[in-house]
Image (cartoon, rainbow, N blue to C red):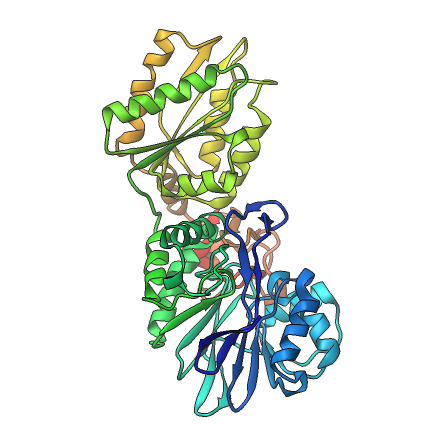
Length: 466
Ligand code: FEO
């Protein structure tokens, strides 16, 4: 249903109080969510984004109550993912010729999902604008890889609203729409959870993008994302939070995550928690059984932590599948600047600690030397090792992974492959980039300075050596 936002801008989205998961079942929704779409009625009538496919018919009916669809002059598609574009096919059946303003990548995304129907796309880039009458215009800002290649934000002059799409959003339903009406603790928690679980892999891009948006000198008075509360009161607070979160964020917290078979590894987890608290009472300690906890909530705690300890007993010469799956998710999130330790019980071969350490290194953590590897149930001498693990996690450690990267980058010209941090594309010198005139055999360091990722378009400095 329609809700007033500001001036001639209304919200025309979908509040979903029943949603429990998102991105399939990969993201937990604990306090509802929303897909926010907006209608601007100035000299021209503009629809910004739509709602998810299951709600398309209700969305189009609601829209019809607000406006004769043939009076819509422009659609702005800030992002092609189906939670924002999912109602386009139903809507465009009624108004097939309406111009759709979006990025070039959004055309690919929308046509890729819904087919080629000859829709009236108008491709825009950062700085392009669209006059909508009454002295107001829309200014477009590409938000590439925040969090998809096609993502874009749109700024409405006069009312000074930034329609930021996924950036600055939260999976949190607020009937009254605005941040000053929301439970501030829940709002901040959900904003952080969204950042930690969805945006953190793109933190290096986000830092640059925040600078770029700052350089545009947009007089932002309101930030209207595509999920959750609209930032009306002190809207730049969320921009400031993003700047801090994108910069290897951590608090004085250590998180312990484990799974256990016969409670031995659980005892080690509790011993490490107790030792941390004894040695550093100001350090917050959070303890989770991975198999029994919401993984997105645990990852939010990892995001806040300066160090983690991960435990698993040995099973099948490796680790429990619950821990293995969790570690894969941890790797994808690309946390930086955090220490880690491993612990676990075993009955005969005892590989789990080594496996955990290797996987933690792969995930970008600096693994401390101290660990606990306990045969059968932990004895006093095993539990006593918790003191050394705690001390190592509390203390400051030099970034092992950063050092490795520096060594690599100083290694001189070679033909190593490089991977794009945001999208995962691998540049292989043996192949080059022939579509753009880069011949096979061209080392990554010999690529032109203005070369960009052929998949997501980010610059060279967001690639890392494999
Ligand atoms: Fe809210 Fe990337 O979709």
